[in-house]
Length: 367
Ligand SMILES: *Cc1c(COP(=O)(O)O)cnc(C)c1O
Image 1 (cartoon, rainbow, N blue to C red):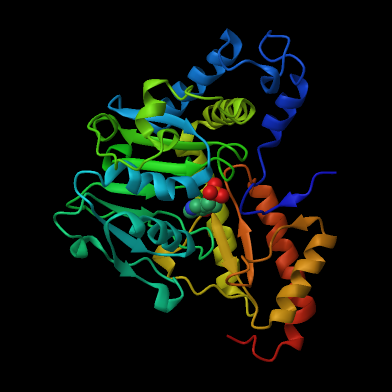
Image 2 (cartoon, rainbow, N blue to C red):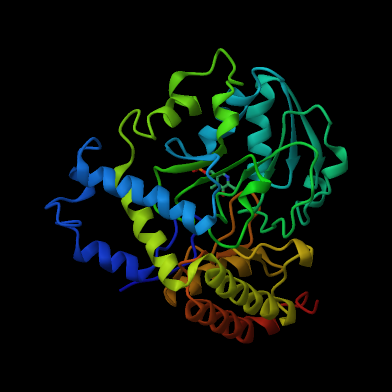
């Protein structure tokens, strides 16, 4: 039996996609093979590779002057690849601290140059997105932001005009809403949250940023974007299966009506969940309303033991992975593209039932 999987990543995939993969597992597209078995230099795989790139370009509206790279090492590898590829000429970069991953990216980048944290909401436990546009140094090479906070449950709902190019970690929200790619010099995302499985990292980067060679001399060959751009992401063996799954997920998004249609459903899912949390006496979410994520919805009761009981009873109701990240505790429901509206309703029904059963025991639950 399938579970209601609210994991932050790797996370649930569309059932239609899983069924299609199952049906064609032994023979994908007349090749007589599974992508796990395909040479990355052969025709059947090359077709998957180029179709996935083309469909990603189409759905996201990626302009021609951007490369779409299929890399490995996760978003975490890009935390270092970004400064290594960009700080060779001008070694100044500015970082915005809006959460755990934003901070991690800054911690890596600061080893490589004059890298400054220009704004932070860490003191407020990242319950809002910092204002940063005025704080950017005019001579910084780029400003780095994490557009959706997977752990803090926050999100940039608008992007300010910036005087330097924006580099954005979109790992936990890519493909969830319409984004104007041309506003960013670079967008990157690990695939295991909203695109495919683990093992693939997508980097969408302005060609001039790769071709102009801003690379630091110490940058390893395998981490240079130019290495991969010159070989169309076939410099070494790519994660063939994960890229094939990406292609099927992108086809599924197109069938749903594209990113705009998906965004509408995503907003409705988030609205229902937040509306319930805000109206309940037992659950709370302290993120400023205009900065709330529509992908990762965090909430908690006022007792750790009650949160633990929630996780336990949820599991008996077939709802899994609702425990908050270990650094913050509490509860979290990740509702990426593949999570259906019906599944979100099922979670809300469970939350209501839990509140009815436990709310009266909870003296401080009269918020
Ligand atoms: C999950 C996540 C990461 C880490 O991704 P890996 O692929 O495990 O390296 C980085 N940034 C954000 C915003 C994330 O959600």
